[in-house]
Image 1 (tube, rainbow, N blue to C red):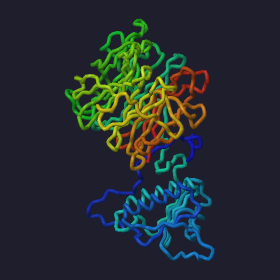
Image 2 (image 1 turned 90 degrees about the vertical axis):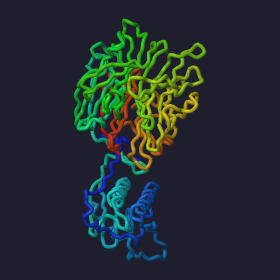
Image 3 (image 1 turned 135 degrees about the vertical axis):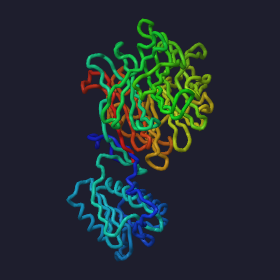
Length: 556
């Protein structure tokens, strides 16, 4: 697989919107005439690596599933005394020894490495790519455009004489299950004033899905660290062109907790998916951590809730979900995260709570409260509370996956490097034994640490794609030396992961918040990934200010 270094000019990839050539039709439309392949054989070139052979198997299975035709696969190898017989009907994959393949290959000679050809000539269907990587993408295109669009009856949705000589996306990366990622757009969302010593972090974003004509609008925010009073509160940004341009539209300030509004951290944006109490579906909510200012000695903390009924133009702080002490005393409350449970019609707010004590030592645990009206909240429930006194799970995020499971990631401070751990459940109020702190998230021998975030999309194969990001590498280096952490991807609901280069790389600066608490989310249809990270503002190695960079990535 190519590394992101080889495609860094455009960067990463990830996209699932199949390019099926299906047009809207009525019941009166004529049946599309395709090629009957019931008597065909799939012939691949003998010299193929494992990935290509697996792709051929996927093609065979797709034909059976979508057309009903069960074809045989063989290579083009000939024995010493065997004579080539080209009379049979064949689907030719790669640079086979058939004359139809050789003729088609000649059409690619003057083309660049991204070129491929899908051609029907006589009783042969030819699929060739200029390179091995291009061939893989050409096979995927053939599956998506001509097999998955078929209507059964042993027919492929492709006609006699078809000759498709085109180019694949050279800057995308394809994984073993044929999932492709590629970067579609990148821009700076927020840049702190130069010389202010302010850094931005804790990015958060939602795409509106329950606001009628405003659906598709992006709303984003972040926290300002090490700043002055002019940057307090949560700046709210809006984009109506899928992230190409952004405009700050408001600022959310905690007016509920007097004296705690001067230092706000860890925002989490949320759009209400259904009517709850007096709040209508589409109401925007924000949870954040308010801390005491310098006059109060940073002795207090509160998880504060805000809402907006005008698409983020104005905000009202209205509820204090939890209160605690300071970070230094390890008695605070931090890092809220919202998630809706359809089966119970509840909104949960998870957060980190270190207000309790064990054996005289402060111990942080992951807790939650839930509501059915956004005003009256349940008693505190516990998701994880480790037996070890010094273990501190925190920075929780949860993704609902297509198999019905919830996947929860969190940092496990107290262990070297605050490694990322995970647990699964099918019920948000039941995480099993609360003393069981789960499984370390690993990609081979690699693991990440601190400030994780996870998200899942149905794009990228039958199990979709689970994405986990974090702040630094704990085991194993990043794929690009010295540039923060990798991104981990799973195509089997979090059972295994692969590591890829971070699409927004950042330098690991001492005592810096660069790359800290990045964000991953998906569009409503799952085909677009929204990724935000906070790399340094400049290339100056002595510059530690961090900005917020937004990236739109396609998955297909």
